[in-house]
View 1 (cartoon, helix red, strand yellow):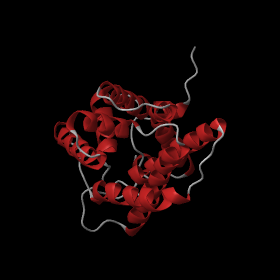
View 2: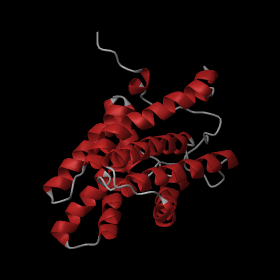
View 3: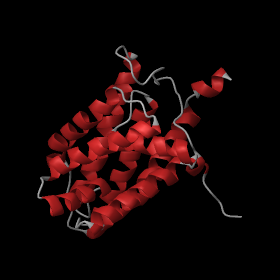
View 4: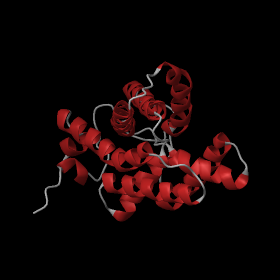
Length: 227
C-alpha cells in the first residue's frame, strides 16, 4: 500500500472563523479582510523569495516570457492578458470573484515591488535552492490563508478551485498539474525554465493543500460544525 499524506487528499477550501459567508459582497467581515491581506502579503513574499533565489521564475512568468517572445509584448502586459484569459475560463467553471480577486493583483505586485530589494541573495547554490523552497512554502501558507478568507480567489487560484470542482481531484494534484501544463506551454513558446520553476510547479499545490489541512486541524471547520 502506498502511503499518501492526508493533506494531499484535501478537496475543498475549509471554512474557518475568518471565512466570509459570501465571496462577492460589499460588506465583508473585518476579520476576513485582515486574513485576506495577511495571506496575500505572504503569497507575494513567497513569490519574491523565489525571484530573489535566482534559480527560476514562477511557471506563469515563464508563460508570460513565452508570449513575449512571439508577440513582442512586455512581461507585464503579457501577464495582464494571461490573467484576463484565465478569468474568461472562470465562466464555464462558475467561479465567483470578490475583492480578493482584485487585491490579489494589487497586494502581490506591491510586495514584489517593495520587499524584493531587501531580500537576501546568495552565491552558494544550496542556499539558492533553500531560498526557493522557503518561497514555495511561504506562498502555500499565504495561499491557504487568503483562500480560506473566501473573498474571491486570484485568477490562477480560481482556475485551480474551479477545475477541482469539475474533476473532483485533490487540490494538490489539480494545482501541480495546472502549473506543469503552464510550464510546458511557456517553454514551447520560448520561456526560460529553471530548477526553481520546477520546484514551484511541483510544490505549490501540496504546499497550499498542507496549509489548509493544518489550519483546519487547528481551528474548527465551520462547515463541519454546522452538520
